[in-house]
Image 1 (cartoon, rainbow over the protein chains, first blue to last red):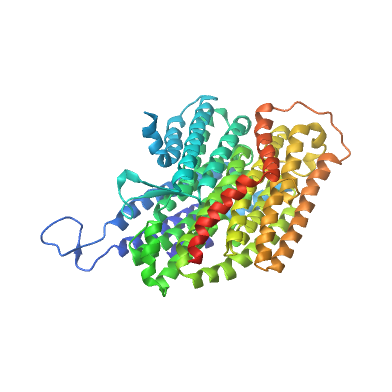
Image 2 (image 1 turned 120 degrees about the vertical axis):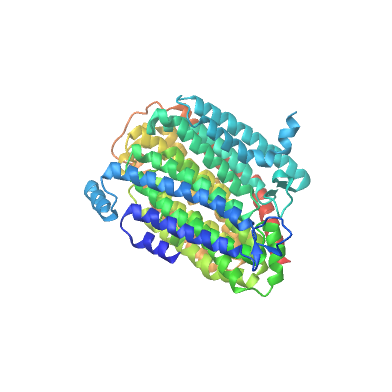
Length: 104
Length: 498
């Protein structure tokens, strides 16, 4: 989680930022799924063999969150592509210097 | 036959825009997406009025999706807190959609207008979901839908200025971090209580009445996430570029409603759920929200004075205005929360009107509107300019406008809490608002250049004047806004005093 956040903050490349965001989000998803584990629990299917069941709800929540995450990454990548088409670079520093030039 | 639909009105106000959005996405026509959106939003307004009628009878509606009882199913809750906001939302969205047509025709490729209105309705539906939902995870989903829709709408501004892409990208990254923080908080809350429903959460949390570290950590994560989304001071940096490079119609919708709905949920979470831990709540309000609001008010106003670009100026003044709202919410009593809601209503109208007028100027001027470019506009386009003047005076808080009512109630609330330093600061920042607004007025009416008045487009100035007249009307006859705000505060604060 911290790794993903670190990538977002430090990297100068927009593509890397999107990747960092994806890692950050995935870490949170794993955190959610780990909450669901019940000791000695099995998959929540009704059988006579099982004594305890793991909680299925966090999995369902994360299924939703994954869809949201995919949409976010897709939109992020689409924006990076458009930025590349307009600026011919996706490095933050180069774009900043380009903008400074165009402002003058 | 109609009654069947009316029973589902709480769901329909959200589902209807979302469904229609999918239908109009690939319409190549110039005008049909707009007409369909208008019809949808008229229906939306009708449903909201129906909800108001229901609420005035019963006082509380809990709508269970698929008849799954909470806490198992997702539910929508409509009560005194959000009915006023729902009504304002419905009306303002309709007006800004009326306004948006000519603006979109000028600012984006007409072949994209189907997609633009599709995103527009997507944003409307999901923001409305934020107002109504009673489920903390469901809120995250609506937050993300609204964020993605508004990011795409902001990126549509790239046809005018390619910086819109950078603004949209930064909003995406910062917004997604905020939302993910919120989800971490939800995870902690779920781990401790096993519920996501807000009412049930309150009940479950009482068993940890002395407080647990995990709960406080979760609460802090949720609050920080929402603060990012609501653009509360130190985490506001995505907002000014996003508002100023978006197409003007989009700036109007976002500035007036997007942060407001999230602020509403923020305050609801504070006073409805986290109220169980009064010591935590007052710690957060006194030592985090209160100083940050003061900083937001002061710094937002000062930065706004130095802006040359008018849309950026308005965006920074938005930061300050959000500061006023959070300052009112940090007061922990009835008058504070009520004045916060008053300012949510009034500021939505004021900022909406200002962005509308400036957006029209941007089209007339065919470039970004800077201070210099406004020279003589007061004579050239008198109808729109006069509306801008009234909205601006209301932003400063002159009597007879609704901005005055906001300031009056805020001062009263601060005075009853004996916060004289804040009173002084709010007064100073109002005075500073005169400075930046006067710069605009000076260029528009008192510059050397005199133009003859030109014809203005009635499709654009009529919506602007609807907003402007409502500003004056609510400045003179402010009872409806006060009533709704008091109602919201009644519902929220009753929990605090028990």
